[in-house]
Image 1 (cartoon, rainbow, N blue to C red):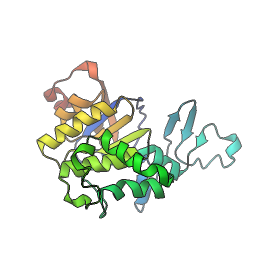
Image 2: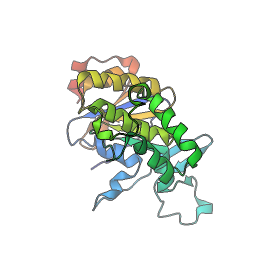
Image 3: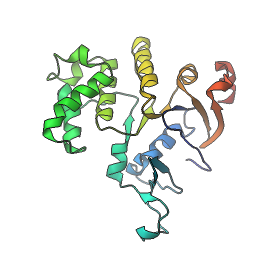
Image 4: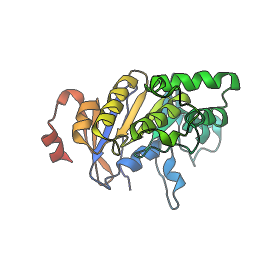
Length: 241
């Protein structure tokens, strides 16, 4: 359960949520794309605001303002929200189809991408995550043939192909080996120049390495907001968690 949380995630930054198991990190992450609503019994109070250019969107329906002409913020439909806010989970969730279709199907069915553009968008997404040169000759083979690290990058490419503004990452390297984890970390640092990244990490060392902001979650609250320049050691951060 989350309570009394007010937090701002800055554009083109990596913000990392850390804390003990059950502290609310993943619940907070899922509140941003309204994924918690998929669970029976979930109730949500409060609001999440999402700024795009000169507009500020309210992500949750306001029960007190049914008349759209009197709302202070433009509402954003759930479909548009999920396009604008991509998500990557702890375990790679590739579809049981080819590498190519893993990206092409969401582009066509969710992104309504014109058929003539799909092939190029697939290539661009795979290049963006550094997979194109590795698998360009295996595009029409099963995605399950890829290594764990390659599958996670494929899932990231699938999200990026829809051209989101924000990336939500729930412990994206937890199931990967050290080499694959560092590859993903280097990729995230480069992507932060263009995307707003909010991630949950189980590793305080990783949080210090990647986070321009580190937020400590404790029993459903954010108890500390730390900037990169504060340079806490892993031991000092451990004491806060």
